[in-house]
Image 1 (spheres, rainbow, N blue to C red):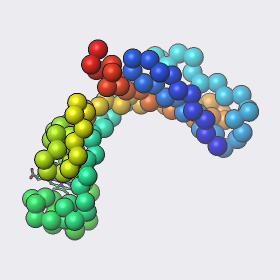
Image 2: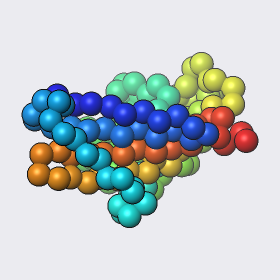
Image 3: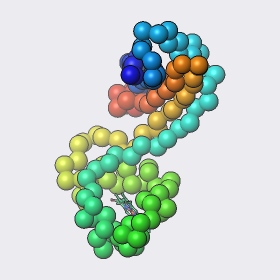
Image 4: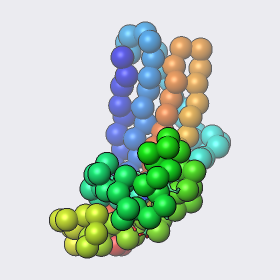
Length: 132
Ligand code: HEC
């Protein structure tokens, strides 16, 4: 059983309360999230890359390593921004690009817990916040 608290503002914040018990028990997310460490994750626009493309010669040396079982991150760590910006523009892996779409966003992740609950907080700037 999990619950969601959604706060909409110029950015987007989602707080997830996860528990093995009923949500009717007293969940008490941190009152002050500013004291919880923030881990930032880059999320890139996924586009549409088929497995056929990933294992084709067009993927340069990636094709052989993927077939051999190497993880994507073994080559692509820290490539998120560059891949996202390339894919969102279309042309190669995204057949129907959406005008004005962002190639990469920073997702702020925070986690806290008490005896019964795990609290996860995800925060990112929306398209509107970036434009303003
Ligand atoms: C051996 C290293 C290697 C591995 C492992 C690898 N890649 Fe790649 N990948 C590359 C290289 C090099 C390029 C750049 C190819 C180019 O620019 O034409 C690339 C390009 C890409 C692109 C294209 C981005 C663009 O510019 O349009 C995508 C998407 C991608 N890889 C996804 C993956 C995925 C998903 C996996 C895991 C299943 C993976 N790669 C594993 C080396 C790798």
